[in-house]
Length: 116
Image 1 (tube, helix red, strand yellow):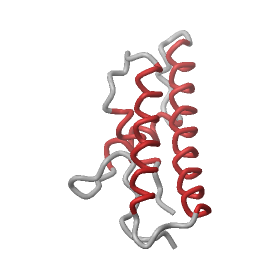
Image 2 (cartoon, helix red, strand yellow; image 1 turned 90 degrees about the vertical axis):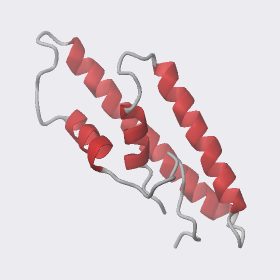
Image 3 (cartoon, rainbow, N blue to C red; image 1 turned 45 degrees about the vertical axis):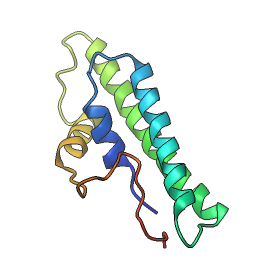
């Protein structure tokens, strides 16, 4: 099963921080569409349970990124602007700046081989 969190976190980090939540939702939907297309094109074909497992992994990454975005928004709305360090936003920033993928990999590209 692929770890989609670094890919999703990096894609979201590249968005304008002042962009509405709709921008994030559109990105998630594009990732879902790309993932399904890629999974359905794998040869030999993946079983429905393997496809479901990968989709659930992507959804978990989306939930984690959204949770971190909500936490950052709460911290920013507090008096002092959320200058607290060590929060989950730090993990988001690390994932979005330190993760490297092979050239040409899209935000939702799963491994090209059959998942284990």
